[in-house]
Length: 244
Image (cartoon, rainbow, N blue to C red; front, side):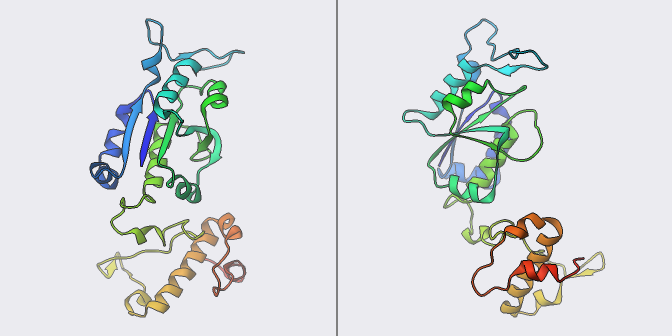
């Protein structure tokens, strides 16, 4: 899978993309990354890529022409799927990460300053994505987040493909609590059920804990959750409990 990143600061990515799972997948040829800077297409002697906004106001806006040229170079012909990182975009989700992992070539466009000339989105963007209800200095950190989330679903990136099955959001719930050795830390013991060897009882406990955690921390997720066939309705269970 190929990621083409349009950014003014490609050097920000190397410490993330060159390490751990992403770095190994890159070395193995499973993932590929390339970078295009709008500054390569600036035409004045100062290589300007931003200008004051029409209508006044604070800050600067990324200019349309160099940004459009950079996206065209990154996307190729016919163009790859083009994503603009924007606080005004659709919220990113686990489901969208899975969907995007099925696309061979993605272009991630990182905004800066007060934003990008709207005509860029009108002409050369297929979707706008936000990673949360907050504003960052630029889209680079958002792009790294999206790359990491998508890459986990690309075959061959994870050593154990089953790792994505039970993690938070994979089944619509937050992940259950996890423990490892030693048995006692800070006076807190690993729950006895996890040491029982009864895999059926462990699975039931984990599901129950996932429901409890989701109800306590993300009731909005629980309200949308639809359990698989044969599993009791966790919304009804949650309403009858006091969560601690």
